[in-house]
Image (cartoon, rainbow, N blue to C red):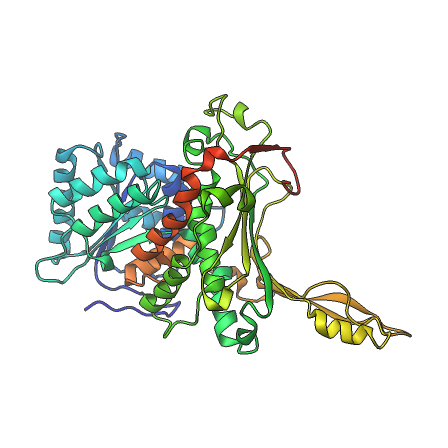
Length: 483
């Protein structure tokens, strides 16, 4: 019998499970997946019987593979006990094969059956596609042809698939990929990863909004002037030109990360905190985004490229790919009518920070009344609520107090909460640790649904279709802002 629990000290899945990673030698597996699995193992949050199978093109002996993983796995010295690392590696094995080779999937099927036979029961199977998106279709088709997409005949073990972003390149490619997935899997088997949803600071937005009744009545156009979502990076593309240039900033982070942040800020309170209800409310907001017509593009969208981008390795000299964008979006819902949502992201800027700021209206009628008494009580400024996602995760509120002394002037102050000040801050799970855990227990809350994916592309695709009509602003590396 499979058991799941939210306890941090007991296994969340007792049923034997095999985790297959396609692209085990890539950066994502090295920097995210394997460290997350090792963390879960060290916390005793993996089943007593589990196996990790790496699948890739390179040829390894068993020992060579262990040495490769031990050397390349991105963990800090002393982060884990050596004994835990050694035993963790004992659970790993490797299957060499090309992603488009039917024979390789036959061998993988035999490997899985051998493990099941050794355990004496059919195990859960979790497949992670840690590969470029252009390989998704071939891998999925081969998984289906080899019947690896099917759960156990006796229903004793499930089969699930984890897919990384970008999920499609536009609305048509996303629809095509989703159709293929729908033919091979039930929706409950599909886990589309947007790792930003797993960040603790983002999850806290839901808790902050819906467990503090004082804020919810103000969460509407009558009180909110605008919302600004920023995703700034100090680094450039750092040698990833061949990967980044065909995608650009809007596809890389706008269609997924930033729209998911917007959804968490703007969504209505769900009927419950179940994954279905939360994802339904996120999808409803994304579906309510007003499409930006071609005639309104220049007024609402800015795109830029940092100076020196075309000199990066792998970038064509004539590239017009954006490394920066700013979009003025609106949500066509009674609560948000007339409130602009600014989505801004860029590389090679002055600092790295991800934050969401809600600007409240200044209450001019009240301030005018106070000024009529010849007392300067309210400055021309606004209350601002900011969710800092990274770094220095936390929440801060800008408000006003009376300046000490004679007279009756006021000055701004800030009320702050920082995660780093919480004693349990160091035990907050990594994004992928949380995502893998939830995939094991079947909780899809932190994974994008079909409706969310399609709604996001319906908003972004019209912009991309007219992208070339916008002038490309070249900005200096290290710029604080792009005009």
